[in-house]
Amino acid sequence: MIDYSLYLVTGRELLPEGKAYCDFLREALEGGVTIVQVREKKADTAEFLHIANESKNLCTDYGVPLIINDRVDIALAVDADGVHLGQTDMPVRVARSLLPPGKIIGVSCNSVDHVKKAVEDGANYVGIGAVWATNTKQLTSLVLGVRAVGPLLSALDATSVKAVAIGGIKSSNVLRTLHGSVSTTGHRLDGVAVVSEIVSSREPFKSARTLKEVYQSWSNST
Ligand code: TZP
Ligand code: MG
Image 1 (tube, rainbow, N blue to C red):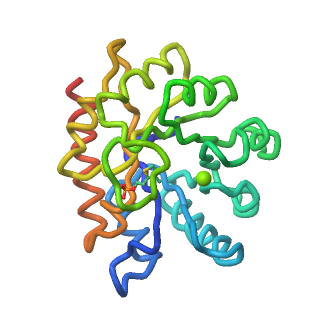
Image 2: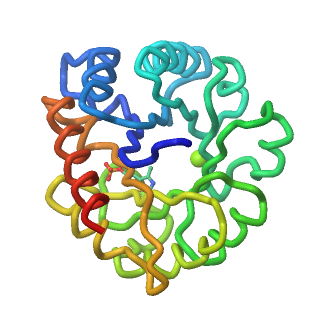
C-alpha cells in the first residue's frame, strides 16, 4: 500500500540559495515525506536523468516511492515507482502499456470529468488542484477552492483510486484543506501534495514534520 499522506513534489528553482538538492531531499525525507515526485520543468534530459537518479538513491534509502513528472522514459531509466501525468501529457493507457506491471500512474485533475476519465483509464491516483492560489505553477484553469474538491472525491467512490490535493497548501491551511474537502458521501483525501512549503523552506525537516503531524492527527480523529 502506497502512503500518499505527505506527497512532496520537487522544484529545484525554489530551493533557498546555497541549499544543495540532495541535502534538501534527505531532510524532507527525514521529516516524514511519504512519496516524492521529481518535477523538472527546465532541465534538459541529461540533467533530469541525473536528478532522478540521485532522488531514486535517496528515496530507496528511506523506503519511499519515487514518481517522475511527465517523462515515462526517465521513469523507466531509473526504475522509478511511477509517473505523474497532466491532462496534456502522454495518455494514461499509453504510459501503462510502456511501463512494467505494478507501476503507479497519477493524473492531474481539476474537474469531475477529469477524475472519471482517470479512473476509466486505470490511473492509480489523482492530484486534485489547484485547491488554493499558487505561485509555483502557471495555472491554466481557475483555482478550485477546497469546497469544490468534494464532488471530485465522490467520483472516486467505489474505486481504489487514491486522491491528493495540491496547490498552495501550507501548514497554515492544511487542516482546512483536509476538513473542507470531505465529500458529501464521506470520501476523504488520502494526502496532501506540496512544493514550495517544503522546497523553499530553510528547514525542510521541520516543514515536512509539521504537515505530517497535522495530517496524522486529522486522520486519527476522523
Ligand atoms: N499542480 C497544481 S498546483 C501545482 C502543481 C504542480 C503547484 C503547487 O505548488 P505549491 O508551491 O505547493 O503551491
Ligand atoms: Mg505534466
